[in-house]
Image (cartoon, rainbow, N blue to C red; front, top):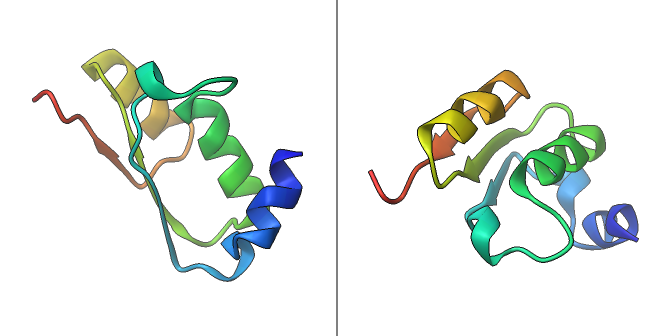
Length: 73
């Protein structure tokens, strides 16, 4: 599953994690869920995620993102 993939990708040892693909392009997940999984696997990493609108960016910050990219702005 997702957790196995994240462990295999080295997420537990990363200092910075970047999920730069907006939700519109993701299938089967979204950046809020990805943020939760990344934070679960590595609670100390700096996490950057992407959002396609300001309201979602706020939600991602509230969910624990360290920085949110909003490419359209």
